[in-house]
Amino acid sequence: MNRRDFIKGTLTLATAAAINPSNLFFVRADAAGNNSWWQKKSVYQVYPKSFMDTNGDGIGDLRGIINKLDYIQSLGVGAIWLTPIYSSPMADNGYDISDYTAINPTFGTMADFEELVAEADKRGMKIVMDLVFNHSSDKHPWFLESKTSRDNPKADWYIWREGINDNPPTNWQSIFGGSAWEWNDDRGQYYLHTFSRYQPDLNWENPEVRRALYDAANFWLDKGVGGFRIDAIVYIKKPEGFTDGATDSEGNCSIHNMTANQPGILDFLQEFKREVFDGHDIFTVAEANAVKPKDLPQWVGDKGVFDMLFEFSHVNVIFPEGEIWHKAADFNLVEFKKALSASQNATRNSWYPIYFENHDRPRSIDIFFPEDADKKLAAKALATILFTLRGTPFIYQGEELGFGNADADGFRNINDYDDISSIGQYELGYHAGLSEEENMKIIRKYSRDNARTPMQWDASKNAGFSVGKPWLPIHKDYKTCNAAEEDLDQESVLIYYRHLSAMRNESEVLINGDYKEYFSDNEEIYVYTRALGDKKIGVAVNFTTHDVKLPFNIFGGCTKINGNYHGEEYFLRPTEAIIYEFNN
Ligand code: GLC
Ligand code: CA
Image (cartoon, rainbow, N blue to C red; front, side, top):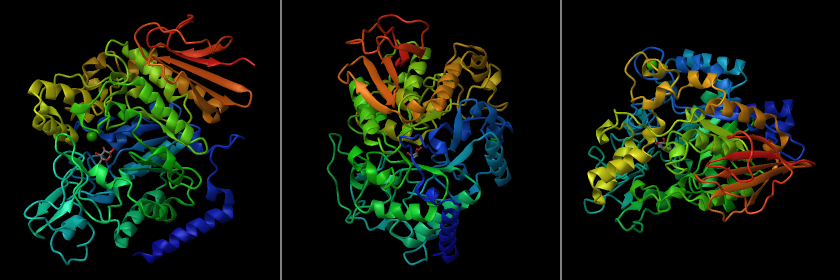
């Protein structure tokens, strides 16, 4: 355990208290509208590998992000979340870390990183790092040592168990498919991996492990980062006993059902908060799949651990049986609205991230709207919701340009996919008896590579992303769907994003107003209001591709202030989204 750092932690806290005691209880939105910086602007998520390549190796880099900071700033952004840029063998594109305090040379150097922080700062933006603390890479020196013997100093840093009669210790299936246990010859034991076998789970019960992780996070705070997105955090606490779990109709028992949100996890998280987050003017957003609305007060808000939390219920309405792609259901608007309203209502006294996309999901316009919907209208309709729900809007690169799922000749069969989970899901489909054609149709629709094709900057070769061969194919539509083109077109998705983002950042009622949903059982439209004092805004979105009339006219006498169509009808046109202001 590193005593110096424990003491340092205390000192930071004491200094912050001396300067401004209220910093210790970071003021969240209150009725008087006292908001933290990260509540007043959007967050932009960058997937560095696919953002902008400056040295022609076909892979995005930190200099590429520096070059595009003005573009990001133009979207009303206060922070940029970078998916992992640390040293990594890239089995899961950086979510397999081999050194928590080094920059992957493919992305650049520490000097580039420092420049990025400084240049972003000049534009009023903070850099937010992704902490992947549930597991490391199997090439991390800690694991390399741990696997050598049962009595080395790091023997207990990972989760090792005996098998049972030549079988793994339990029937748990990893999130990327296949057993969650991997055999190791040197130790004659199995190790646990929630994700791929290249991502062994760290043993959080060991205080030295926790100390090492906190030190790594503090290293980045010292570099001036503005916060953290914390990966897969619900899995850090394992159950007391490891036993087989119930299987589904295909004979699988997902590790998620056995290890997510175990009793005792909050003790670890409270310590994490004390040792790292407290006393800093940062924000934290945890990836926390399946935290129930009723448990939210322990997770977010004044008594909670984090400032915000990504849970999956609204995006996972298409996976009612868990994230098994070939068991996906059609999009269900009523369930989607129910999930959004549940989190809006559960965080009245705290705060929430609003998101529809990230690097793990297919593109939203291909999931939440009928196939025949106009893609541009659909992108703007979702943007309307993104900027008018209560919470910090998270924009995922390309979403603001109306990107759809990957459509490129380069994606023909499974070998063309890079995403490790697509390969696991393909195997699941294969074992479930899907034909090659059916299986590939599923992969094409849900693959995480849909969100990872390179950014489309302009109509030049490789969409201006790289002068070399891009690591993933470029979408076919890049000649018309790109940042340069959209910048000049007043009707573009990009310009709509800029308008709405600016409107939201300046609107007290959109930042802090109370949320109220209408017509929750209606299967065609999403309608809600936001109200603060005597100010009230209404939003109506048509999720179908036909005209729909509101069941009763709650917006009579209101003024339309924005929307994805010009003018107004007495009904909502296909995929129409409108923002109204109530007149006093
Ligand atoms: C999170 C990340 C995802 C990664 C996984 C394992 O879900 O968002 O990209 O594969 O954790 O680290
Ligand atoms: Ca590069």
